[in-house]
Image 1 (cartoon, rainbow, N blue to C red):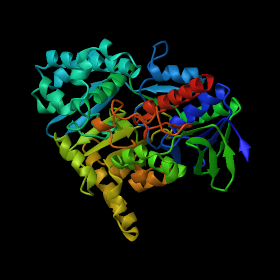
Image 2 (image 1 turned 45 degrees about the vertical axis):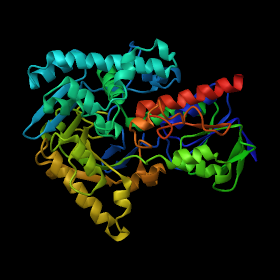
Image 3 (image 1 turned 135 degrees about the horizontal axis):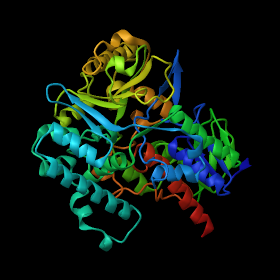
Image 4 (image 1 turned 135 degrees about the vertical axis):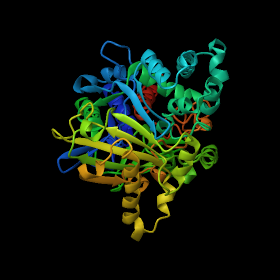
Length: 494
């Protein structure tokens, strides 16, 4: 039996920032990770001459030095930012639908309006009004999240925030192509425009237009390693290749954890960066309140993804990549694109990340590292017989290559290294049901106005952090770990 003040389960984004925040505040913390490296989705791996970024497409909230950018400020506060080199992307994305449009949207409010007006003439005033709404809804949403009294909030948040993205776009624009381009980031949130709350798209657009999209030299693994370093330097302890199999409780209060070798560790507080289904399973059915069981039964496991990682023996310019991030779709109908995520039909849309347009150091000179990603739900792959799995995933990878050839013809000839990840791969490495990297489906009913998992687990001493308890994505989960840690620390001081 060993004693600490807190145990953090899982060294993903939220687990790392929670552990670092706790230990630096003097809370003796043990971090337990089932994998052999920190990071969860924020990791990388090597194949031949290349290192592959697992999941980071664009990091938001960094901003340039001297700006009051939220994520840079958080990383500064933890002593991490000074250990990292951030690489700026100058465009949000290139959006392509063959025969309809090929538009590059710059990372800046006025520049974005200029580019979109050039591509879809006659919409400048509408675009200006739309981006004003994006800014206003985001401002008041942040104020509401900081618990400003409802009577002091601008009604624009209540009128527009929970409306479907599709309805807001229809109200502002007539051009189907322009609406399609502006809705592009829905795939970062995992829900189509008909189901996605406008406040979520507004927050995403604001984060990238105001503070620009970024990468990290050395990839997201460099950030995970830096977070782990500051935790260890503060006196924290981590155990890799170790799983928590039980969360111990008595009288409705956490009292520690049980590890996979049978060791029991006492702690007054446990922070779980694991999925909610796994967290409550570790607690044991008898200890899970009825309200929690009923709530979990009402929720839907979110989307995962299929990713094709490639090391290419050619430069981005030779291949035809002009932006770090490109979205290639077969048509304007995002609802049809979303429907395809539940099938093995050819994907209707892919996100292309070319990490050497603004190099992060993962590819040798004269080469490039590219990933192709499309959203897919895990149950599609769970139904494939084991004997057919390998053939199925490489057949599906070929379909992604068909899509990317629209902007990179002949890319197949440059392939030197390749690795394929399906939702089952995500499930194996992340330990998430269905390989869901956003947690539950991020529709309007899962938003912060309706669900409050991060604030209350209904079990004293159990704290929930990460995409399963709040919004998914890199910046949201990194911030979530710090929020949960600060709440825990305040509770100890009370």
